[in-house]
Length: 141
Image (cartoon, rainbow, N blue to C red):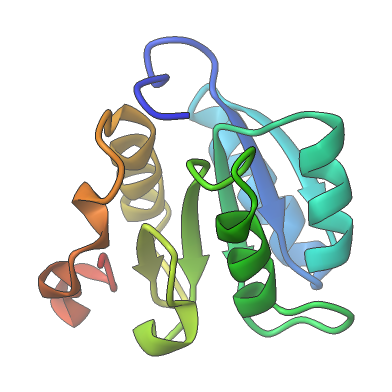
C-alpha cells in the first residue's frame, strides 16, 4: 500500500536478533510510525495476515524462514504483493524482490529516509531499479 506517509504508517520489523528489533522499533517509533515486530519470516507472515503493514523491514539472514523466502512469499500472494519491502543486507542480490536494500550497519537517519521514501512512493516498482543501488549512500537500491 503506497502513498501512506501522510498518516501514521504501520511498519513490521523482522529480525531474529531481539536487540536489532528493539533498535529498529525505537528508530521508527521516534519517526512517528506504528511498529510491530517478528523474529523470523514465518512469524512475519502471521503478523501480516493479522494486520497488514504499509512497510516490511526485514533482515535477510534468519532461522526458520529467512528474508529471501519471506519476500518471495509476500510477492507471490496478490493480497500482499504490493506491500513495500525494505531489506537489510550487505548484498543486494540476496534481497531480490525488495523495493530497497540498506546495508548493515546502517545510519538511522538514512534508514528512516529510505523507509519514508518507500511509504510515499505511489507507483510500484519505482524504487526497484537495479541502477539505484549505491554503496556510497548506504545501500539504497
